[in-house]
Image (cartoon, rainbow, N blue to C red; front, side):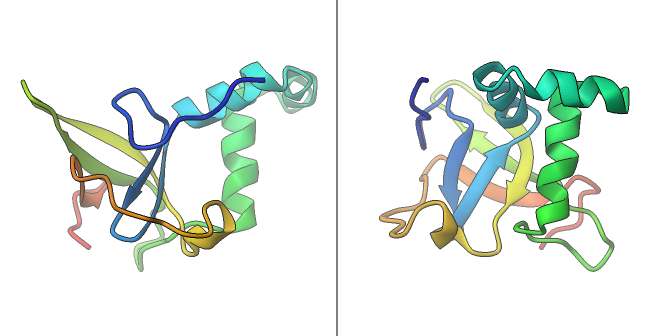
Length: 119
């Protein structure tokens, strides 16, 4: 099993606005790579394994939701050459994953949910 990196350019987990941001679908694809037995369960549901895990995560309700019901947020990642957007989930309570968030990723900023509604 490999370690997950945080707040690095290729990371699937970031800290932003004093909470945790996980990149989707990348984080769920990574989970399926680490735990391939999920593929058997997902096959019975006739859905891709990463999507099965994403739905399972949403059912836990650990993430922030907007009044419009959407869960996927957009963050801008400012790099030395360009700015790109990544999509993912913001946690309601970051302490469940990281007890002490030391700092927010200075290169990441929440810009909107997937429907471009600014929080």
